[in-house]
Image (cartoon, rainbow, N blue to C red; front, side):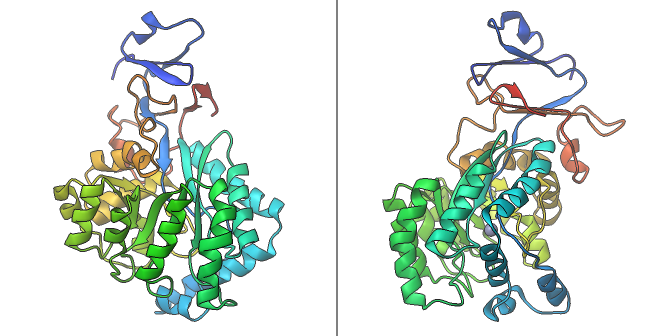
Length: 377
Ligand SMILES: [Zn+2]
């Protein structure tokens, strides 16, 4: 790779390339990349990083043959995390969230999407979004409102939907940038998802959906029709959903952790690729279906289990992940991009080629990390 400089100034990438420092403006940060791999700061576009309690019991039951959906329908799964999260105080939740995000920053992740969804009351959901926002710094957090994670056990379905689309949306929308819905067996129906996403959009939120994971519902096509930034999971998406996503420019966020833990089939990556749907890769960090916090591991798993190329995996944790969050000026190193940068040492004896970080699975700690042009790690 030779001696490459990245010049950062005023929070933006000013220049990149051999000798770029020559024209650097006064006060610019000159990042000397000699011997290192330089990438835009990584972006994890789908996590549920704020929760309390354990789901070890679910894991043991699934390994004994129980399905994710049957555990959820039996009052376990997400409901177990909701009970423990409601019982925890805000300081505890914040400490847990920070403890989960800090290792991500060490891996060079500079932006993380964090969903609510383990509160499921107006006050508890707003609290989770406040915690997600408070957990930022230096890492950037993009909070997503997921009061539509599932219907709480202690609530009438119609009453909960009225609260969700009314006072809860009004209280949570100012704390979030997007609305999300889990439309699947054991959670919300297609008609309910339509109502929830429209209510979020009316409050100015971007649209996202947990789509076609356990069962096919048609929510990918629905969400794309509402201009969704992303549809996530997609193990069982059909051609109409793919066509709708391509037409809307919705990003396919692939979550190989959940796919492996739940032993689901692979999303139809070849058909998504052929249709021109951009693909991102995320951890889906959560205690139930994807206890995985290492975005590099997710990138490698997306290659091994879904058939992405190393180049697609790298785009999936940078530029395409940024698009899934509606942030087109992140995830690039071109001049004008946000000055979030991560530098890595290749594995011993390896090529100075970023694809080796996908080839070798996980745990790639960054040598240096910059956010907004400032060194933070
Ligand atoms: Zn999720």
